[in-house]
Every structure is written in C-alpha cells, then in structure tokens.
Amino acid sequence: MTAILDIDLNAIAANWRNLDASHAGATAGIVKANAYGLGAAYVAPKLFAAGCRHFFVAHLAEALAIRNLLPGAMLAVLNGLLREDVREYSARDITPVLGSLAEIALWQAESRRLEKTLPALLHFDTGIARLGLPHQEFLSLRENPALLDGIAAKFMMTHLISAEIPGDPVNQAQLARFSAIREAFPGIPASIANSSGTFIGADFHMDLARPGAAVYGINPQPGTKNPMQPVIRLAARIMQVQHLQPGETVGYNGIWTAPRPSRIAVLSVGYADGYLRSLSNRATAMFDRSKIPLVGRVSMDLTTFDITDAPNAGVGDYLELIGSGHSADALALEAGTNGYEILTSLGHRYQRRYTGVE
Ligand SMILES: *Cc1c(COP(=O)(O)O)cnc(C)c1O
Image (cartoon, rainbow, N blue to C red; front, side):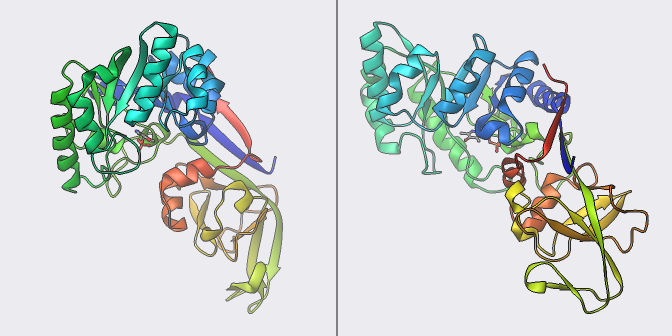
C-alpha cells in the first residue's frame, strides 16, 4: 500500500446527527459529487440508517446509482430537468428540483401523461444567479398558480451566496427575498440553509436544512474552531529517501534548493491523485506530531518532503497528508482553495478503507 485513505462513516453520521439535532426541521443528506468524493454508495446508506430521508445529488446519473439504496426516501436532483430525462425521473421515483417555468411545464406534462400528481422541489433564485426561477418567472408563477397543477411541491428552496461569512449583509437580503416568495406559496415547506447557513441564525433553519461540507468535516465557520468531527485520514508511505548536499535541487525545474545536508522523502502521491500541484513548496504533512514541509514541485505521481528534522522517519514509514494534525481545510489553505475542492479531488489510486459500513 503506497497511500491509504481512511474514511470514517461513523464520524460522518455523527456530524449529520449533530446538525440534525440543532434545529427542529428535517436535515437532508447532500451526496452529490460522489458524496464530496468520499463515496456516495457508502455515505448515503449510512445517513439513511441515521434517519435521513431527504437526499440531494447534482446529476440524474448520480441519483440512479443510489436510488435502490434509499427505499422510500426523497432523492432529488439539483441541476435541472432535461426533456429527454423526464420519464426516467418519474419511472425511478427521482424528484426534480424545478428551477424555471420551462422545467415546471415539462414536469406538468409528465403528470398529465401519467394522470397522477408528481413530486418536485421549486427552486427560486434570490441572488446567486445560477439555478432557480428568476424573479420575473416567480412573478408569473404567482400570477398563474395553475402552472403547478399536477405537481406536489414538497419543498421550496433557494441557495445562499455567502453563508460562510456571517456578517455579509447578503444573507439577510436573501432571507428577506425568500420570505417574500414564501408568502406567495403558503403551506409549502421551505429550505434555505447549506452547512454554513445552519450556523448563522435560527431564521435560516426552516423546514429542511441542506448541509453538505460540514457533514464531511469541513469547517462551516472558517476562522473559528471547527465544531465538526474530522472524517478522513490520508497517509502515504515513504518509498525512498534521497540525501541532498547543500545547493542540490529536487524535482521538476529545481524550484527547491537544499540549504543544508537534507533528507528528502519521496511519496507515491501526486496531482493525478488530487494532491494539487498548487501545493508545490507549500504543503505540510505530519510525522509523529511534527510538521514536515513539502519541497519542490508536486508532480503527477510523486511528491517530496524534507524529513531532515524527523530523523526517525525512513523508508516504509507513513506521512500523514490529511488527518487530525492537518485538516482538509488546512491543506486547502496551503493550496489556495477550499476544503470542498480538496475532498472532491481525492484520487482513486488511494486504498480506501471504510469504517462503520452500513
Ligand atoms: C451543494 C449544495 C448544498 C450543500 O452545500 P454545503 O456548502 O456543502 O453545505 C446545499 N444546497 C445546494 C443547492 C447545493 O448545491
């Protein structure tokens, strides 16, 4: 084993339960992008066993892959309804998130064809300008509620722009816009909060919270102590140790020069594994609670670390790249990205070991 990715499903379930217990409404499981890179086929049944009954993915194919694992649960697709997919949604009990009048019309036509009411979520744009009914379409729908005949709106939802910045006034502005939209559709349960949104006030909890990243251990309140449990550990074995003289360089383009006699550990992990190239000369690993700096370029399949100050580290030992000593958020900071990208980039050459499989 050259690199091991440990995924703790019990910690994922504990994070979900804690978030669920923090408010009165229901809590969804967000398992898009293969459950943020951690394996939807493992995570979805784990959350189901924890009591989760509302699931979201981004693509229809992601929903089809896990539909049978979630009997009776709502399984919704966020990223829009295509005409050619409509029958597959209804046949497989997959709930579309409708974000335009055109999508609403497609689903209504399917309801007429089948002569039965079909479930859906209604997505309203309150400023993010990606998906969701634009304001004009909301006004049309309010004028003509018959557009929804045959559609059972399970939830109405919107998505926050900046919830991880609690003081950003756009949060309250979106809340106000969404509240106005809700008044036009009394009786439909509502959903606004992503992970960070569940931490910015009880007003944001509503009937269904939609936390993704926090369930996977990412800090929903950057800059403060992370209330979530870590859920992964990535460790890679030292394949070889190189001894460099002062002035010698390591890796492509020689971007790091040994300032002293140095021991360089070579790991079989690279940017093809989602260990991002932007970590070159910047990342940290852990060995026995000491910090080990990455030196030189991250290449496709290899990285190099300076273990001069860790005399006990040698060939066959493991450096911890992500874990309790160095979180995905901390690595993200070094890479110039966020924890979401670190997780969803995690490679497929790691040996993945799951604990708490349902
Ligand atoms: C991804 C997503 C979420 C979850 O967001 P996190 O920031 O990971 O909690 C919630 N709602 C929508 C619409 C999303 O696309």
